[in-house]
Image 1 (cartoon, rainbow, N blue to C red):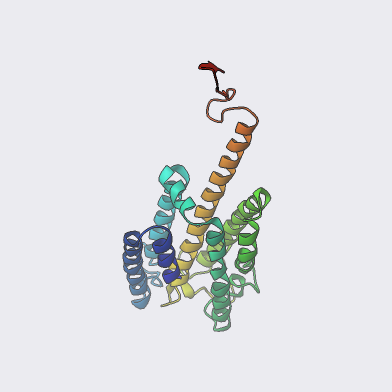
Image 2 (cartoon, helix red, strand yellow; image 1 turned 90 degrees about the horizontal axis):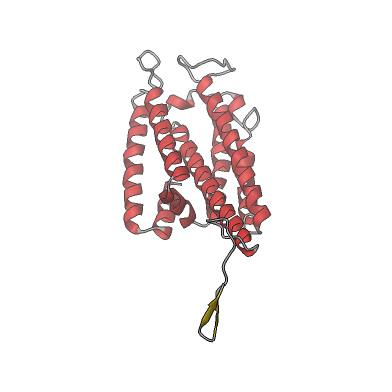
Amino acid sequence: MAVVVVALIAGYFNRRAALRVLAGLSVWFTYVGLLGYFGIVKNTATRPPGIAFLIVPVLLFLLLFIVIVIRSTAGARLALAVPLWIILGTQSFRIGVELFLHQLWIDGLVPKRLTFDGANVDIYIGASAALVAWLSTRGRWGIRLALAWNLVGLLALTNVVIRAVLTAPGPFNLIHAEVPNRMMGTFPFLFIPGFFVPLAVVLHALAIRAISSQLSTTSSKAVSVDGVEPETGGPVRQVFYDSGSIRH
């Protein structure tokens, strides 16, 4: 998936941006890998607990990214640079993540409620991603459906993330399952919360921004066709040239 991300950036932006993202991911993967390899994340005796060294940077990154994407023109250009159907279809990677989580449950590393056999419905978001990507190319109704799908996808992701944190050993262990969630502190499995979860949120944010821009553009065109200027709200002036005179 890291290769896919870098390839998309290289294809729809430029090679320099792709190299910067590759460098950033390399640093982040090294950081997360060391946290897991040396057992820092699963250390609950420290203050702050080890899990904070993973969760806090992820939350700060996502908060900053979402603010930039939602509130800035640069965020709009970023979201519109890649075709919407590609952004939506890329969410299919969540099928593999959920199958992997299911295997971790079989191996006794995560509780059942974190899998699709329990309370995790995230696999259905991944399974429907290709269909929603295709429907988003069918017109305005497909784009609206994609918007609703993205909101449901964020809710599904929030559900499993909260359960994962509350079933992990440590001060946040408020849900006592048949086995604790050892994935959060085990190398290399903590790349699921350290990379795949943020990736899913980033794709949702980009898709929602792109859809909002497309819908607003479509609405502006519709208003203009009805004879109202989208920016001023006044009538559209049609200028005719006839024998040197101008009529409005």
